[in-house]
Length: 142
Image (cartoon, rainbow, N blue to C red; front, side, top):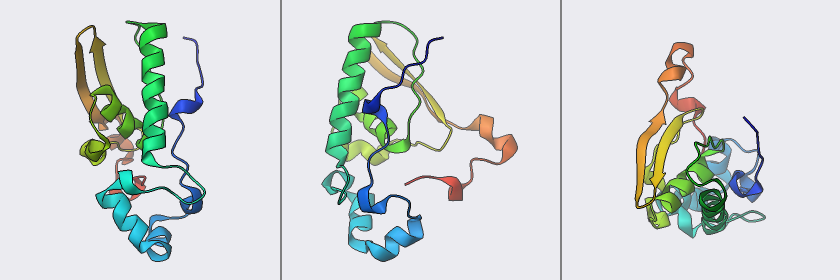
């Protein structure tokens, strides 16, 4: 199958958080970290992006796929923030549903987009990781 790269589904630019571990973020940016956990749509990372900016580019990507690829089966590989925003955009939900979707590292989901029907058929499947013990909590991303 052909492989395409698209900048619209790259990870959020965490700006000043980039390269930091969760513990470091909690210590250096406690208020922003709390806001990220409770109302992430209110966070604009200094020297980075906001969730709204990611949502707009991911939604644009989804519209492009629908127009250009129609009913083809497509595999999309990305990171947790663009994937969660993709679920919101796909279901036409506001960003306050961002944390409503599981998105573990190396998980997969199956979405169905027919003419008048959008459905998340499978969500955050990680059973393929259990044998290698790769689904542990400490391996999760922000």
